[in-house]
Image (cartoon, rainbow, N blue to C red; front, side, top):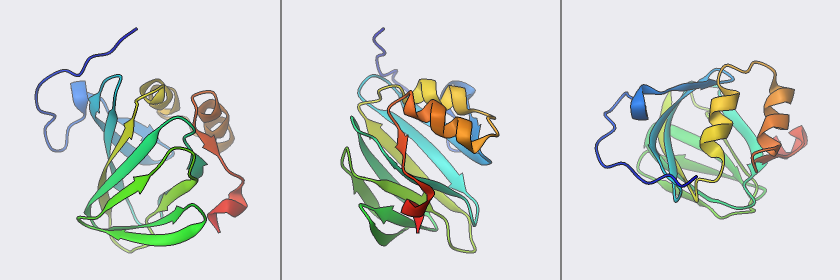
Length: 150
């Protein structure tokens, strides 16, 4: 089924069509969803993170809007601050971590969208990290072993 981009505005603090997801304690707000792209906002509290993983069929970008993120990008630690754009080509291992003492807001987008909206719908309020890893792998997001986060 083809999904076209709907025109309009997704307001600050809202998710597209009023939707939000809670994935292991982090709140995600979808901003735009269509076949060619999947965009969402995150609000990461200090200590929150997404472990190192790979999107084998998608490019991903992060525009840090407030605060800063530490990223493990292809095995190297880098820091992105407000206004910075992070580019993550398909197949490159990456994870993001809020190691600061302040919240971080960022806009993410992935192209093409693939199965990410379906994945986020399935991960919403799922509490078991092992199940998150399993379900993610079924949707073309492959988490690396925990030592990849060191």
